[in-house]
Image (cartoon, rainbow, N blue to C red; front, side, top):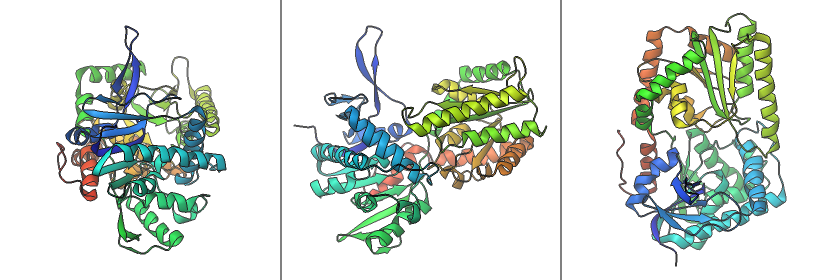
Length: 470
């Protein structure tokens, strides 16, 4: 008999990693991440359960408890991983929801496996949820779970949050099983998005595709109301501030600048290696500024961290080649012996090193073609302390609606990106500090705990543990 919980989180991944100890034993440890941080107090208070995939293929581990959370693993086979995750989730839904920056691929066998896996997650939730429990389903891999779960357990209160953008009607209509996806989401009582426009797209789509009536942000479905709303996700602001203020991190930031040759301007990009992030366009803008003589190698240096991502998906393999070719071209044309123009890292970077990079960088470039939020932009601001710094930010990142004191640009316009970067580099220190303080104040009162609390209050979960300001 499964342990029953009054609060259940359903996500593609579990918030744990399996590690091997120095003795050769295998054990589970919590994995870092804003979602885990935000939901941990709620989960521990309600003796909650987290349902998700543990990594690996074949049988799932037995359920277990870790740091006050009940962990309920769901299995995936190698074929399911390829079709549900790499296929339907990341080669169909991901590009379509990101404005079809790359062409989505549509395959029947992927859709069928997506249904099968979503049903398995819904069954697990139905099994562990107590009578009248709250279930919070996360993200694009599990969009069918709310309706499947409602059919199995009409007594539950169900929330869904989409961490990526939600497309306009014209794009969504390309999806071969569009009505099924929409009905899947409408199984929830509350559907949350990063942006108001995404919530409006969803409400209008319900009218357009299914002929459902709506009033404001509430849709009438089968005699009940489904609410849609914007809940912009954030970071653990105070934890990032503490990390950046650590003397060892500050010392490492100085060391990074020294290793770069103490340039006048350090420009930083930190992204998953993903075609939505605009890495290649950013590098081209930097190359053109060097070619125009508006920036000089030695005075200005760029660090680009590109974390490996979905390396078995063809789009991502092609992107890596393009990015690395562009880095090679810039360094070949403009670099000097011992002084490359771009330092490129195709690797994961730990939290301390990342905080040190943020503290060392005069300008952070966050220039996605489309992004649900982009938490890197928020992390950079939290790590700056009182040292100024400048954020060049794409208008098409969700963060742009909150971080209005950044240097906003259209990443599709190379001249616009170049102009924003030069304005950021040449701005007066007093102006940069003023801009940064406004954004830091916003992040302190709009942190990840407040995000979770706002969503759960709207869902009607009642008071939750919350130590955040505001």
